[in-house]
Length: 75
Image 1 (spheres, rainbow, N blue to C red):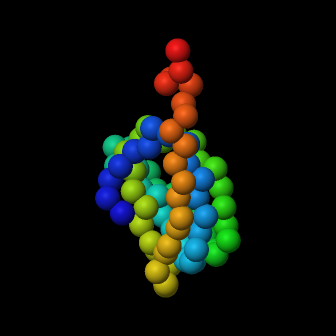
Image 2: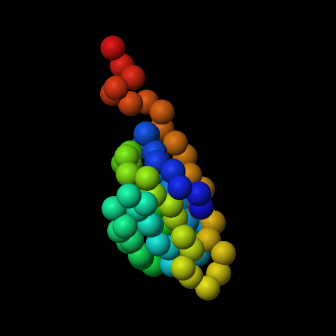
């Protein structure tokens, strides 16, 4: 995946995959973890520029829903 950052909450469901790494560009940090079909989680906004890298032996597919309602958008 390309380098990016999120300004909103996300709900992610893994469709298929086995292992994923999250690389952070500016701080040279990498988190790697196992994933599996059906795994789901809410993710907080992430201000650090990062990208996902498939480190497993099969394609990685996820369905992501973005929540654009943020406190910063309210009066």
